[in-house]
Length: 138
Image (cartoon, rainbow, N blue to C red; front, top):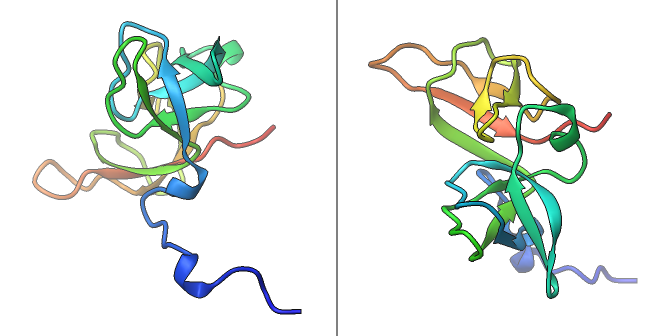
């Protein structure tokens, strides 16, 4: 039996994958790009997401990261994984990444692990850290 998938339908996902993206409602005063979010309810047929604070209650389960800024009560795209660039986070490749109280990526230990450094920060005049946001299951 032939495969139902055609090669032309498969899209490369180097930085993120739209095929796994979720349309969500921002349930805070607004969510900025690369904010880690957790589901906090629903509005119609859409999930409402809030920023994930640095505590165990909001750093487990189906976490997403904001692809772009999402206004309060507005619609936006949440991604289950994403390569995040331009971060000023120190650490070697493989260092665990967490979320802080504002839902931003940090190397400071808090809550659950939400990613790993892929490329280490090499200095102010060189490239910043590249982090793969991909929450680890427990």
